[in-house]
Length: 272
Image (cartoon, rainbow, N blue to C red; front, side):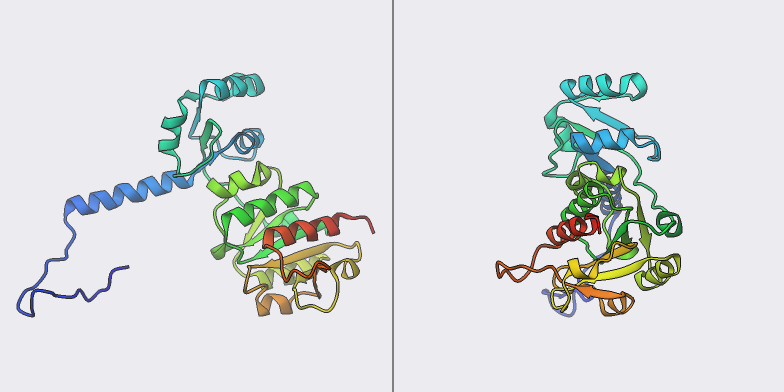
């Protein structure tokens, strides 16, 4: 970010004109619109197919596919979806750099979150809560594991969680359209509401004395995962009923948060 105080290399008597002209403003507006448009894109075969199958998702603004993918879409969905034919290079120009699109892209508004009380009632099974986990690849992988192991849903911190689009959606491989999510501003208060409904919260902490398998009791459980490095924040941790670690007999100090979440979700899914 540029400083408000510009250095004057031409001496104190020279005043530099730093005001942005109309061309600059128009360019900035174009970049902003481009960023907003790109933020609405999904790509990848499994991601787009799951989005088209989700009746709760807003209608697509655009659906682009190569001829081969368009044929597959028509075979799976019939004429219910309108496909714009394109080629791989043209689609790559529309999507963010590096997007592995597999010949299909879909522009659609982000999914609306589910109300926490609706998501959590009745108290049964298990949920996963992400405390300021912000990396899209990690969050997407956690959604995929949550869906695979039968979690009721995913709860994220509203101001510190990425949109469920783009690289996150690709990493989730369609899971964002198969499992509901809630966005909460205050996770501590969310845990209080969940406790009132009948949920028990377990925070994953590498320094906890108890082992996760011993802490889980088969009842309705919220698994609370923190960001790598910082972990679960103090106030959120204080609203949990128990702290637990994942034992690592191999001696490695820690796991990536998405890998740890997969282990925790597997453990929670085991019958007790």
